[in-house]
Length: 437
Image 1: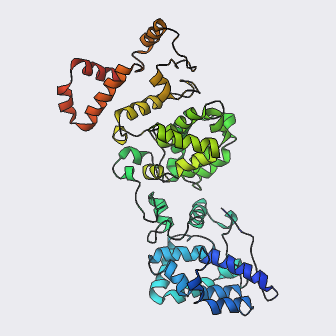
Image 2 (image 1 turned 135 degrees about the horizontal axis):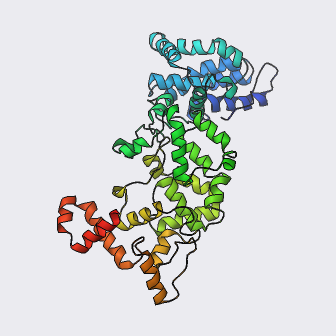
């Protein structure tokens, strides 16, 4: 978590130091600088603070009672969300358990906003942490009594006003596995009706060890070797302790030497992009336009920007959210049978099996032989026939076979299965039996 050097302003502080402190107070308490029209309401308050008539604690006490603060964090929010934000702004942490929630909720509802803030600013915790002259800030990991408590505060500190909604507190949407990044909390789209997605979701500490093995199987296509685990030991520890979620863990894992050595350093950019889509989005690239967008980001801005684009995408958010391990998505997701076929091919490919230079979607189109890990074009018609004979059962390399598969998948996607089976000719039935093997 980001921590800040405490800023203390007392009677000896200069006006320049107070100007700097004023900006810091607004960043901490309002999460932004006030707009011009808002400053009129707090003009006298600012003036008294800059002249040294008010200490930090007194200034904050008046600021949180102003409509500038209450309009942003109280009037359109649930009481629980308001309590959570107030703790973030004034105590530099999230709420520490249901007992504390009950105490402050009761105070807010029975005695109002003024008594609520008086209790926080007059508490022994506030006095010891910040006193009268220190600006509140996010406190570091040593302060927290449990990893879960630290995680909740870390999530809250990186949340901007309204980013995760004004109704459900972070402590609840994170426990429930909800996606609140847009400001409206929803269960990830595919999880609402997909039992497979739910089975990949990680919420409790007891599931995390199994989840770790599943993540490695999906993203590394194997379990790490003993010597490799040393590099990611701190990452594993944080994940198992519940300090970071699946998305955060994946984000760190894919920029580690372990992942980059396996899939980036000896691969072409196109192959790397294809494998990354397989690991993180559960599919292959849709078309050449998408390939162009992502390879452009990769070549111009580097690996970090490339992964940011994937993790920040609307598709990743809806499909997996923060807590679901990516997985191969089913045929209903794909916009064409060809797209499904390409994804199916790459999901059955193991690291290096089809080479590190030519992406699967190209070697398959070109009729290349990449089974050995090195892609080659047949030297002659005879060679091509030889290669085709070797692979005709294992891989659909011919154009005619591709077209048959596309047609068959299209029929299966758009019609009742029984009707489709009745309308199939013998060749199609034979092809279906081969695909099912």
